[in-house]
Each structure stands twice: as C-alpha cells, then as structure tokens.
Length: 115
Length: 236
Image (cartoon, rainbow over all chains, first blue to last red):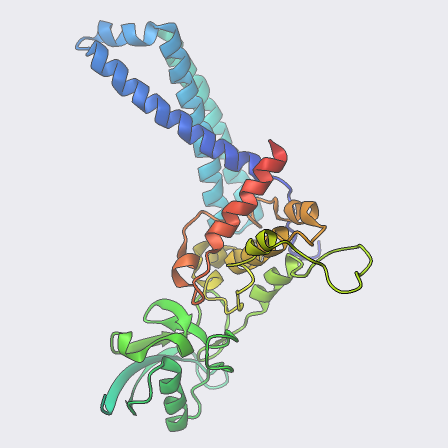
C-alpha cells in the first residue's frame, strides 16, 4: 500500500454533541442524586435499596450510567487518537475500550434491576 | 535608559556540524534604543553571524520571526526585551522540524493552511466593479482576516503537536472560518464537509494556548466554536 496520509472521515459532529449532551445529563443527575439523598437520608441497606427500587430513580440512574459510558467512549477514543500513531494498535484499543464499556453498561443494568 | 547587558540562552543546531542541538549562553550589550527582542537578535547576529533566524518586516506584519521566547511563542519584533526574565531563553517554534537554530520547516503548517482552500470561491460571473458586502456582513470578518500566519498558535497547540499531519490547527481553522463567514463565498457547505472529521476539526480540545499566544490578539478558539456552531445548525 502506498503511504499516503488520508483524512476526511466525515464524522465527529455527532460525537462532539453527544459528549456535551451526556455531560449535561450527568450534571443534572448529580443534582438529583444529592437532592434525593438529602430528602431520604438513608442509614441502612434497606433504605438505600428502597431509593433504587423506585422506578424513575432506576431510569435516571441507568441513563446516568449510559451517559457516563458514552462520554467515556468519546474521551478515551480521543486519547487513543491523540497519542497512538500505529493504526492497528489504535483500532485494537478502540475495540477493547468499546467492549469494556458495553460490558459495563450491561453490568450496571444487571446491578440496578437486581435491587 | 542607559546601556545594559542582556543574557541569552539560545538553541543552536547546525545539522551539518552538530550531532545534537545545544543551548548556547551568550550576552550582549544593548543601546538604550534597542527595545525589541529583534533589535537584540540583530546585535547577536553581528557578534556571531552563524546564529540563524528568520525576519523581514520587523514590525509584526510579516510573521517571520516567530519563536519560543522564555517558553512562550511570540514575535521577536513585538516583544519588549525589558519585559523578559533573564537569561532570555530562545528556542525554535515547538513541534516543527528544525532546519537550523531558530529556523523551522513550516511545510506541514502551510499544507494544513492550503487544505482549507484559503481563497474566495464564487462561481458567479465577475461583477463589473466588485462583490459588495453589507457593513454587518463585513463586521464578521474582523478578528479573522488579520492573521499573519506566523504559526505561534498552531505550534503551541498540543493537538497540533500530536497530529500535525491530520489536525488543521488553530491558524488553518481561523482561516477556514474567515471564508465560511464570508457572505461572498459560495462553498460554505463544501467547506463544512471538508472539516467534519474527527481529526481535521475535532482534535481541538479547547486548550486555548492559541488564544494565549497570538501576537495579533486573535481568537482561533472562538472561530472554531463558530464552525462547530454552524455544523450543529446545519445538522439539527
């Protein structure tokens, strides 16, 4: 293969917007979390379990984790793109990162819905 | 002000003679009329004519004498000697290959600049006199057209250091927005398409070193933000 530098992947805007949107969701969830904890003031395991047994809290918590992992995907991918020059290695790191984050998402869902 | 002696530590590298670059300590006596760093460099060159640097207009218009001055990129001709801590450490612009001493190879920088098509694209027949703009439309070009391509911004940008071959860099993106913002230009969509790329535009992580060092007081980060803003308005 001839060694020509090619750029022009025609993507990036959606990721950039998603990174900002997920940041806003996480910020809002943090406020919600503090408010709920101040209201309930849980002191026992049952009280903590009670908070997360609540449907809307479950929904927002899961949304928070999805936002966190999507945000992390874009951020970590940026790191690989900035510093890892070898394309094969970069692709492998992308796949490993993606696989881990998808796994974490499923794990977060499993934990949340077990409560 | 009387005569004064100023200490320098200058990056020296002549690939024909030196195995590796080294820092040379040198001092020079300056006249009261020697106010700018370029005045001192002229005196240094008279003392040791092997010291190499670029210069041309000596008044901040040509952008030739950009260098790293005490760890910060700037133009020698616009920098007051007395504002600098001694010894004044002079290095070539970071991130670009050194040709000799303070002279860097700007090929990569200009390649990125050319990649954004830095000229007006308008396929209409030429008007008899000129293509007019309203004063409001012309206003948008202020803070964009003044760039002198000295490369202080791009060579202080870590994203440009890591990907100079793929990331357009602050200078190129400022110029890109200068043509995107121009109401006389007809290639806005193509220009936005050309930049919608995880490397070309989205390597900018808003570090803002570019804004910090620009000797003309321009704001490439703001221009990059406006490009993203236009892409969002186009897509959403």
